[in-house]
Length: 116
Length: 117
Image 1 (cartoon, one colour):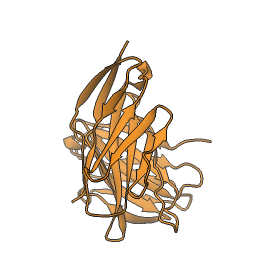
Image 2 (tube, helix red, strand yellow; image 1 turned 90 degrees about the horizontal axis):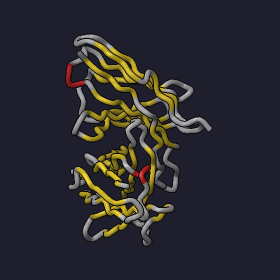
Image 3 (cartoon, chains in turn cyan, purple; image 1 turned 90 degrees about the vertical axis):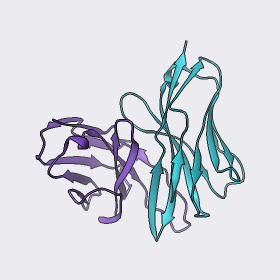
Image 4 (cartoon, chains in turn blue, purple; image 1 turned 180 degrees about the horizontal axis):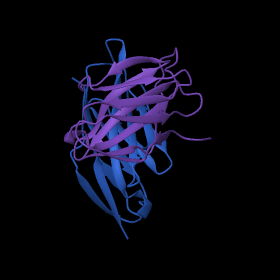
């Protein structure tokens, strides 16, 4: 069964430092997509970064990079130069095809707090 | 360009009542997804609509239902509300998955906070 695991319920980081949010996934499907979303206290989900299972290079989007280690089935999010506005919930998600239908699976999230 | 819009933003109901949540996708998006985010449980997939049809359904009882209209907006209906239905309900939209099999990212609305008393 497809599953996303985020083992860090909460993380703290000092402003301007880098932080890594962990995500491991489980699927037998060779084709899948991995996403990270940010959810501030307003509730809105904000797309951050995407990695395809066949992508050779790690995805980067500004201060966000995805450390994709396929053999380990991990897709950690790295945020460089943390800002106070980065304080939010972060969700790792996986999108797979199952029996001709798409299925989306989310982790339980990691709450990131950036301290001044 | 307007993002995904959901209404209402907050809703208070009592057990046994029925509720309808609404979602308007980003212009051009044909797929709409519904998620439930209960406290401490993360996001749970509810429903996926594309081109007016239900494409996939999560592990929820039949009292959770919905539909997608010709303009691609969508409604989520929950009948016979129970206390554990209290949650943030998020709607997301994306383009239809193209012929190359490329994955499309989802764009989420701000959600509807449902409280069942």
